[in-house]
Structures are given as C-alpha cells and as structure tokens.
Image (tube, rainbow, N blue to C red; front, side):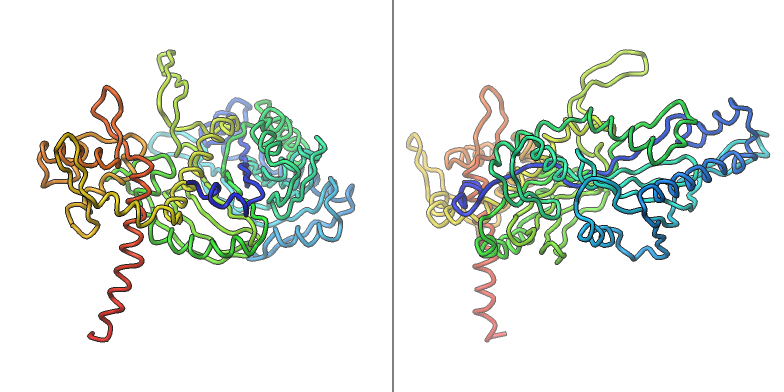
Length: 506
C-alpha cells in the first residue's frame, strides 16, 4: 500500500508540479570563443580591439537599467557582499508593495561571468579570442508576471551576455488556476489549498512551453536590449530544474507524527544503488561522480537529500503541513530517454541517449522526474508500512511444498540468504530485471545450478516473478516490501536491542 493510500484520510490532496526552473539564454555564434572570433573577423573588427568593441554594449545595458528604474520609480540597489540574500530583500519588498504584477526591484552586483581575452599565438601566427572567467556588473530585474508569477532576469553587462531567467512552476500553476476561476491558497511556492487538486493537476500537466518561449524572448528584448545588434537572437536551455510531488496534509499534527520516523528510517535504509534506482539509472562499478546523502534543518523544515552527481532527490516537510519529494538536476542530459538522434552523415535514428538541454525538453522531462519521485514514494511506503510486518516475514521464513518438493524459507540472520536478498534488491536490477548470469556475477560462490535452485525458491515464495517466454525475473512488490521490512527490523530494532542487552557486560 502506498504512503498516500495508507494516510488518505489525513491527506487533503497530492500535486505534482515543476518548482524552481532556471533557464539560460545564450547567443548562438558568439557564446563561445571561436564563434566570437569568427564574428569579429566577419565584421572587420581587430581581435585586440575586442574590449573597445564590447564597451558600448556595457554602457547601453547600464543606461537601460537606469531608464527602467526611473520609469518604475525604483532605486537600483547595489549589493557589495555575496552573503546578502536577494530572496529576503525581495520578500520584504513584496510584503510592503503587495503581489500585483509589475517590476518589484532591481539589484546590481559584481559577479563572475564568462568572457574572452585577445590572444596571439606566436607558434601559429594566428590571433584569436580565448575563453576566460571574468567579473562584471550584473543586474537582477525582479518582477511579477501575469503568467509566470515572481521571476527574475539576470543580465551581465559584458559579452557574451549569457542570461539567466528564473520562474517557479507553482507560481505558473497558481496564475493559470486564477485565470480559470479555480480558487487556491499559495504560500512560498506551495499550493496549500485548492477547491480541486484534480483540476490543478490537469493544468500543471498542460504546461505551455511555447508560451514560455515567447515570454523569454520578450524579457530578453526588454532587459537586455543589446540583443538587437545580433541577428541570431537567444537560444534557451535548461540550467536547473526541480520537480516536486507535494503531499498536502489536513493538519500539521498528522504529518508531525509520521515525519520524524520516516526521515530517520530513510537515512539508514537508502543505499547508493537505491539512489540510482530512484533516478532511473544503473549504478555502474566505474561510476566516479559524487554520491551520498545528508540531513539538514532548513527554514522550510528538516530535509533529507540523496545525490548522484549533478542530480538529487530530497524529501522535506514544507511549512510542517506538506511532505514534499523533489527531484533536482543541474544537467538534464543526466537522464536518458528514447529520442531522434541526427547523425553526421545526415541520417537519423531513435536511440536511448541523454536528454537535450533545450527549453522544449521540459515536456519529456516532466514524466521522467515524476517517475523518480514516484519510485522514492514507493520506497518510503515500503519502509514505513506496518502492514508489512510479522505475518509477511513469517510467511517467507516457512518451508513451502510444491509438487511434493520442499523449498525452505529465508532467514535474515543467515549470511547466504542475506547475500541473495540484498543482491536481488540491487538498484541496477529494479529497472532492467535479472537473469541467472547476473546473479552469478554477484554471488561468486554460486554455480549456475545453485542459482537456478535459488531462483526457484524465490519464485515459490512469491519474492520474484518471471517474464513470460524469457529467462528474466523481477522482484515482486511483496518481495520488495518484505525484504525492506526484514532489513529494517534487523538493523534498526533487533540488533540495537541486542547491543543494549550486552552493555552491562561490556
């Protein structure tokens, strides 16, 4: 039974929605050193005159920011230190001005930005631009949009003018619901209440990316007018994205009773292979990137986070009344899916490959991130569901007779049995299943016939199921539940209690 089903009476609704989204805008042709070099040559600009070429654009952007501030009767606020939180400044301003559409504030700050440096190669005799990491003045235009809600546009004042535009999917959803006359209560990027979660979900699923694309172009022209000097326009790609599953409880007391035990159990139960499974990946032995978990206390609530390289999945109690599961990635190509791939010879084919980073990947990315959240939800449902208890553990520990042939049960304190159970729970098998040869590669002391007998034993006890007309097996829901519960009882209850019993004799 899923967590949401078990506590359905205490839950007012469940909502899946994009949360934080940061889109990056780059100008094709000048967003990399070789491209800008070609652009200068084609426009008859000397390479060592690059700073002189770029200076007027800087002045144009500064003048535009001052003009926008003057027209909206806003004073540009310069932040001398990075530690000052821009979000807090904006939050305080909105409390005073209200949340009506329009420009909220303009913040400026000196921050790092990609840039170019003129270079002459004495060996080749060629002169060109080299990529460097520089520092320039950036403007943050914060505003509330009719369709996107609270957003900001980050504009650097130096070439190649790489933009960042932030919006939040919950604000987009709230605005869309208001246009349809659906009442809701939103607080800090979370839909707390609504007259219809079902209607809200349909609106969330129908995210209009074409409309977002048009809005991004409009914002670029408004806050970065130098783009008119470059006929290529902006190309929009996904820089960071979060997709949230919100389980909204009716009362804070109901979530509080569950949450502490949930996080404590999860932090001990989730292994690296589980993290890979949540995110739809196999844990390759050659995997070199960062992987792990951490537990922290934040303003929104306590948070447990599991990360795999550029991608993570976390769970926290937002405002004490929402259990949020959220998958975040800074590199959408981490996720693989079947898509059309263009080859150098002009042909194309459908392949399982990394997702494109372009704006329109928000469409297929929705299902992938939602499935990651659902796999995590299923996992925590298994580890906290008390219905998976003594009866089910007892069932798999007993001998089963089939066709006059006995198949002994499984013992969680038997080393061989534990090796088998932990192996079939491996994250790499959850998605693709396993065969005899896969288990032999993990269970080094087992022969092919021993593995076959073990598979038969697992199948007889209902732990695994066989795919028709193949030699492939999958762990059943019952098998996943009972193994997870057995390991939980052993590692978190029995062993700690035994260690306590022996403390007086230590």
